[in-house]
Image (cartoon, rainbow, N blue to C red):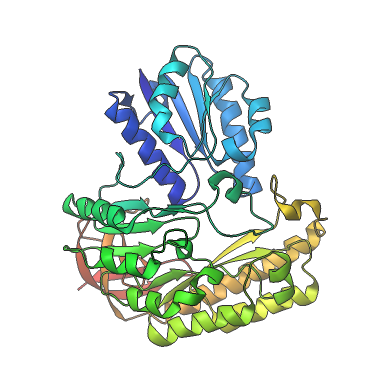
Length: 424
């Protein structure tokens, strides 16, 4: 029996796929890299956006059509968020929910024998220190907590991941230590909201970052997305932690809208001024900070004035990375009961912000032209060369290096999405 795992979506979901692979390996079930060689296919789904949902639905349908002889198991967020649709498009598919990964070997074996098995529902099972199989020995993902404390009206992911469940710092530290000893050069601390870490256990994100960063070895730590409302009472300590030389000078702090009215209607739990206060503190203390943010274009209650406030915010803050998403209804989300704004308005606003995004990010990168950067080589480029990350987590394309190297480079070229450099 051979199994192929096809994972979609965020870093957290990628780690879920690695855990499933690890559990299968522990149970002597063979994993294959080619779908044609598999007897069982696991589709580890993402469901955060409508285009992703459509992609996932099409994928499941195509697998059933093109590989009728193979058994299909659907995992990931779709299992918890939209079981009705999943059942309608794949009535003969087995399921493995994101909280039931320790049961994946049983699900695979029974599915292979012709049964339709459906394991789902929430669990407090830890995802730290469990077996993992990855095709990237340099980058090691650690899920520090699952679930969130949010009630964002546009989000459906929270229904799949459940309430906050933080894992102990000591367990996370031990997994990181073992990964570094086994050759990992980048430790990615991930969660639906890393800033919520420890709110249920009395521990703190800033302490976790410091504990991992102080481990022996040459490596970098990347801290995943932080919700602004949950960083408010730990800002100074988190800044101090990110100043550690082993931590990328990078934060992912989504704002979603520049309008306080829209933020309130989204139930984000923070104001624009609070967001600016956090960002200004970070930038004052860490001048070479890379700030990533998220913007939802065309939330149902977004007026022209609200949109202009978002434009103003971006021009003021000038984030180094901007993730734009057109608003679309999601299964179970509160805002799905609202009437969407006209498509042409949405399209116009999205195009306008895309142009601003490109202008800002290119200008930010051009400021680094002719600068000298210390970089970590993390992966091979899809079109040749290697991709390295600066200490501020900005990608640099370089040649004549080895994976895992720390090297000095001079930046020779800048685009809106990456830099190019030469090794010094």
